[in-house]
Length: 317
Image (cartoon, rainbow, N blue to C red; front, side):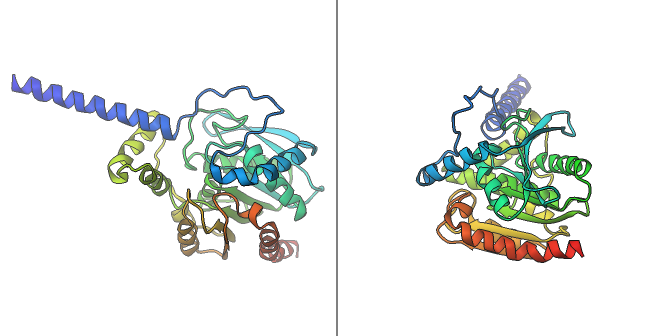
């Protein structure tokens, strides 16, 4: 009889673990069916820190909506249709392949990036991550699968533009995505990486957010990891930016605002310290999460120009 009670208790505990893991999966990784958004609406990042810059961000979007572009599409390694928009500055210009943040989309997060690229004489391909924007999918994997998608986008660019000079660029989760990709076998024409306010690893940023929610991170994180594995079908600890940059062979410039209250500034410091390739860390004073460019665009452009000018000229020799 006691054995039945023990078996019942074990089954109840297993069900409880699965339920809690599923709730964590839904909160962290799952994206519900997308709503149809009026084309005239502006979806801006959530958060009080962005209110101050709302007019500037809407201005970016309005300007970019007026630019000619080409809608493009690839199929991911697991069969999803991933979509992007290509904006050409001039033929044969260097191309930035640009990735947005967690639960964002290419228009809301990266319209300013298009204008920034044009100011530097570059074309740009804005990508909607899986489960974001116009791309298919229902699961965000914090860069684990997205970094594999990055390699597919590189194949697309190399098939479309032979010998193009390509720069990987990303903000927040997008920065962490391209940092993870930087540790993989990149095409030789990828000349560098721009990582703006990326985190060190999916594990650490999730534990940081759990702590911000006033919950015990060491207790809650295993449920999040299990939820990703069972319901999202991916290993949250398969790769990380901080490990990838130890294998990176291309130059990396890191940007981070020193008052970032979502992805701590120290995470970029740790990624910078771990990076084994040519590198630079730019600290933007007074910039919150994802706001480094909008807070100090002149300094941002200057740093990018100084970092990449010798790389571009070396490639042309």
